[in-house]
Length: 482
Image (cartoon, rainbow, N blue to C red):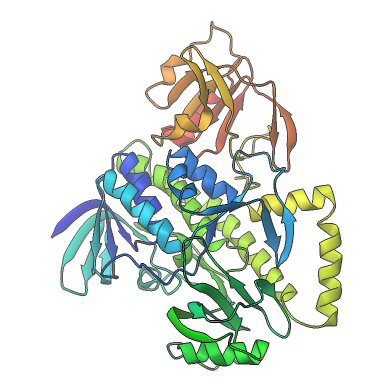
């Protein structure tokens, strides 16, 4: 029997990101993947949002992704496009990059960190007890771990085996997606009449990404090129000379969320915890950010730094985030419908998105920059992501995100008196004495005055801000880094 501290089921972006986070924490982690190798085709997701790019920047690997994709300073809400160039972030753009390329970059990164991925290893079942989890592969191989994390998609076998409820709403529409070869140029972009469909071309790809709504929900067989052709003929009256497709897949607007993200020693992340209509490209990004929230917490529990209560904060923080994603994707799917009444509603929303505050709020939500974890603290910065400040230290200038590369928390002293000894907390977090701008601009919040000190968690979110006395810091450190 093979033993690891943590086993991750699923080598998609969520599972790979989680593996990297745990490896940075010094945890013995392995990934079990039912596929026999990385998919080189078949990527539903097609991009990364600004907050996900920030997450990659926090780990020092964002340039690997930027060098492979195309950036653009537009996002959309149900196909209503608007500019995000004025968002207060270094990454005020989205990145068009197919999921298989995202996976390849992440897999290379976790390999550098020493993580083993067992391809062709399908988990057929598991049992858990007070001390750990025993997983059984379809091949008969057995694995023992302290914690098992299901990152195995919307049909998650881990979730089902754990008996975690998956309430939500059934499908009302069905769509086909494919990377296809066309002999004629289609009308590029998103379209809604007579049904939702789109045509895009990704950098470095020879195929066209086609998405088209099917006329019925009844077909549940493996989709084919002929299904795509029929759907295009129904929607457009032509198949644009469709010759072949590298892959074809079907998805619906089924919307569900796990009732709990944790059952004792089994946890869920990514699509295993939440599924929704993929409009706006929020699925991959929400999953990756699940992983970054869970990774450092699980690492501290495995390493004996914190008690298991820390894992409860994973559900408490991430469940509301995904619930809001489900909420906004359901709204967007309704706005995608055809007809004069929906057109009137879209016209109204499009007008609202020309207004500064409305646009800023929707942009921050779609880009993942307005997330706030409720820590019950009066200071507006607490619970929000920390901006990537330009810092001046005794060793020279440095960006704040570079201090997060190792996945360790930061106690940043900006204006504390020299009489206050902050080095006594250096065994728990990285202590940095620095100078920064006196006011910071954050999404939605706007301009805020810089506090005297800030405690930044390994995932880049603010756990505490302090005045000149540092009141409350020991209690907060004991909460997150006990």
